Amino acid sequence: MKFAAGIIFLATQLAGGLCVAVANDAAAAECGALGVMVADESNHASDVRKCADHPIKHEDRRKTWESLAPFDNTTAASTLTTRNDDACYYDAPSGCSGGYCWKACGTPGDGKWCWTAAGDGSGKWLTCKSYAECNPKASCGKGIGCASCGCSC
Image 1: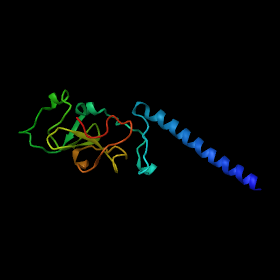
Image 2: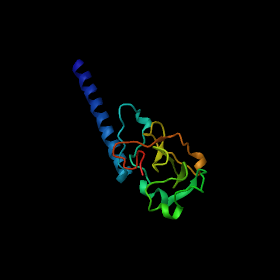
Image 3: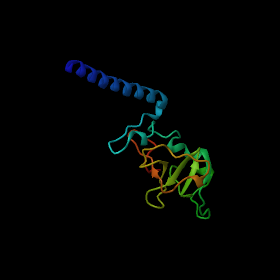
Image 4: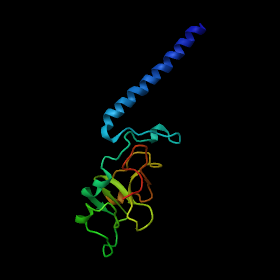
């Protein structure tokens, strides 16, 4: 009887490992070039987004303008037409571009910005239809293998 219980225990452990492998393969197929998010020990799996990178490349944000938080345009550093060539951004403190929230980050005036994500930055990318739906206090996206994560130009 003990032998049978040991076999059953081993079989259930192996089956669980196979389920994880299938799930990872499915996530890899779904995420494609965005890569699969790797959770660290501090995150619960349900709080971590499936795909690591942001659907809109960091450098492409300016090509998808939708809604900007109010800012003083008399001191704006650039115009919408010239921003496509400028990696840094100095105008609105936050906004909604291509249906995703972003915010200014880093040292004020250095032009750095980030895509925002739920929780500590490992969660789902925050979506929007207007800058008013974006929280400038939300976390910058973070993740291993995420080129669009963090605060940068």
